[in-house]
Length: 238
Image 1 (cartoon, rainbow, N blue to C red):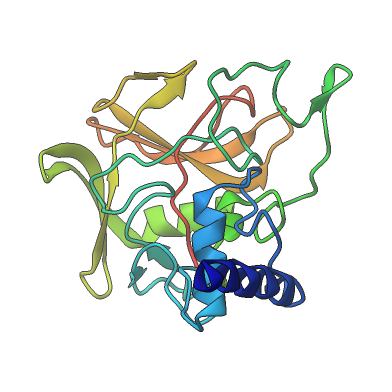
Image 2: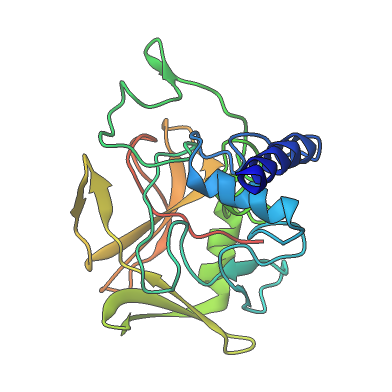
C-alpha cells in the first residue's frame, strides 16, 4: 500500500513538475482529460519521450518528397497508426471528434458568424496536428498543398486493400498514400473509397478553408468547402 501511495504521490509531483515545462492536465490539448494525458505525464516522469516531443517524429514518419520548401509530409493521418487507416475527422480548428457536426455546435461559430482565427491556424492552438503530435508538426498550408500537387505525380490506387491517392515525388521517387477517407457526418462515414478531403490551415473568404481533394478521376487540387464545421481528414506536415 505504501508503494501504491508513493507511486501516485510521485506521479502527482511529476504532473506538477511537468506543468512547469509546458505540460498540464490536458497534456495533448485535445479538449479532454483522459488516459492518454496520464500516459504522456508518466512518460515525462520516467524520462521517456512522447510522440510529438521536439526532435521526435510524432505519430508518423516525416516523408521527404524533395519539395522545394523542404516541407515533409507525415506517413499517416491524425488518429491513425498506419498509412491505410482513415484516422479521425475534424471540423476546421477543432481538436477532437464529436457525435454531431452542425453549424450551431461548431466551436467557432458565435452569434451567427464565424470567429476570426487569423490568416493561418498552422502551429497555433487551433491546429490539431500541432496540438496532437507536438514538436514542429502542423497542418499544411494552402501553398504547401499546391506544392505537393505541382511536384508529385498522382495515382489513384490501393494500399493494403484501401483506395487512396498516391503522391510520388518527381525528384526522389518517395511516396505518400492518402486514404480516400470520404467524410464523417453525425457518427456515420460517407463516400469512403470514393474520394479524400484533407484540411489545410488556410482559411478562405467563403467562410471555410482550403483543402486537398482527390478521387479516381485523378482530379485533385486546391479547393474550398462551403463550411468549416464539416468533419474532414488531416495529414500533418513539418
